[in-house]
Amino acid sequence: MLVVFIAVSFYPAYGYNDYNAEIKKINEEIDAKKNAIENMKNRQKEFSVKIADLNLQKSSLNNEMAILDNRIAKAEIDIESVKIDINRISLEIKKTDVQIKEKEEEISGKVIRLNEIVKIISRNDNVSQLETILLNNSLSEFLNQAKYLEDVNFELKESLDALKIAKIELETQLADLNKKNEELNNLKIDLDQKKSALDAEKQNKISLLEETNSSENKFQRLLNQAKQEQMQAAADISGLETEVRAKMAKMDESKLQFNDKGMIWPVSKNYISSYFHDPEYPFRYIFEHPAVDIRAGQGTPIRAAASGYVARAKDSGMGYNYIMIVHGNGLSTVYGHVSRLNCKEDELVMQGQVIGLSGGMPGTAGAGRLTTGPHLHFEVRLNGIPVDPLEYLP
Image 1 (cartoon, rainbow, N blue to C red):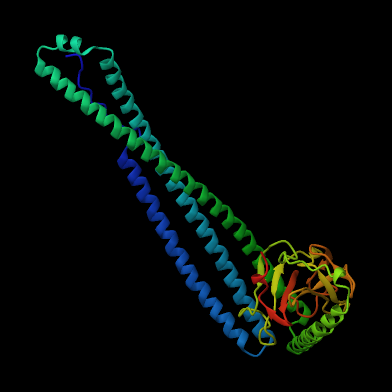
Image 2 (image 1 turned 60 degrees about the vertical axis):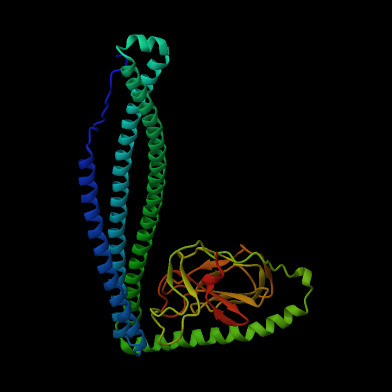
């Protein structure tokens, strides 16, 4: 016969069963990490409940210490949880890498098989039908050979189709791998932020103990001063809203450079240490938190979230410093714990303009009483009522 039946088998260096065993082992490790993360979440919830309960109790130095201890413990669990999640994603990446190697070997095997089939067809194309009949012992053998070549052609089509599918699957796995890598990088950033939060909570505890000298009476005096500061600021801000809008109504509209492009972050988008009406806010017993506290190092430039009119640039010396800007559409913004003012009352500022420097470091100018460390207190008000700033920030 002209054509000898060829059965090409592909045996990868790293067998199918070896890949299956490795993937199974990785899956078991991933499941273990998922269970550990679930346990961490349950512990996080327990600490959150404890903190919320303590915040509802009458504020005392011992109570504040208990809140800080629970916040520190929760932050440590947060860090451990992120570390476990990083390990889980690393395992997911490892598994995808193994699956990619398996698919690459499968594709290589199909390519080898296709090459053999193409060689058979190529040899057949170089021989005429008459030559083929003469070279065969009988017409029956020729017909058998023709049937075999028909089968080979069908196998070639099937192999090509399978190769296309394998290529698509490989591309999908590579995209999945890139996505997991991106997720891993985000988790690493989150881990750094959690570590910073933990350091801040520990510093808060040290600062509070130093400021009060572990004296309950001194703590209550500071607490009362902080309450009075916040109440005075809230009253001033509410009163200014109506007064300033009436003043603005009489101004030349061409001078009011209000923008309708939405707000920008007043400091770099960063870790939020306390949210709007945060149930874990340290002094919630005294007043609801009407803002978001954005992590910002001492002296970070504060930029106007939107163009507007400076209604208040309050310098209280060692007390609570803040800036209030009135914008269009009934909106206003407040920037608290300002260590230095770079704007004046009754002036117009443009979006992105530096209006001051952040503060909040205990014992520094503009920080106010019982501050929890360097950050920017950022409020958004709609028709004078505090609303969640995160709904207005990009």
